[in-house]
Image: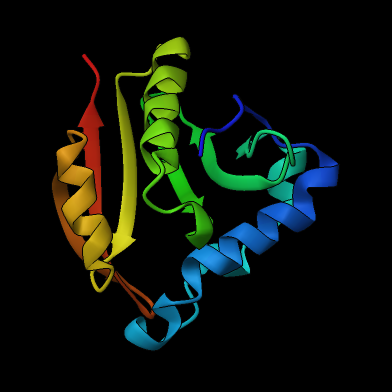
Length: 153
C-alpha cells in the first residue's frame, strides 16, 4: 500500500481524524487503564488551528495516518501520531515521522519533542530507531509518560 502526499487536514477530514485516532489508540485503553489523551482531543479545533496533517490511501482518499503538531519557539512538539491499524506495516508511520522532521527543519526549529505512555512499549522501541532520546520519565495526572527529543542540528 502506498499513500498520497501528507497534507494539512481540512474541516471535512475531522471525522476521519477522529476515527483514525480512535482506531490507533483504542487498543491501549485496557493496557494503560485510562483513555489515551489523543482520543479526548478537540480534533475540530486542532484541524482549524492548522495543527493536523494527514496522509491518505491512493484511489480511495481515505485518511490512513496523521500527525498533530505544535510549533514552539525552540522546538516542534509532536502531540500525536496515529496510523490506522489496517495500514500498520506499510511505512505510513515512518513516512509521517520523516514529515515531522522535514516540517521542523522548514520552520527552522532545532529539535522535535514528544512523549508516550510508559505502557506503550511498541512506541518506546520505535522512537529510538528514529533518533529520539529519552529526556525524562514523569507522571502527569493519570498518565505515566516517557518524554523524548530528537535534535536536528
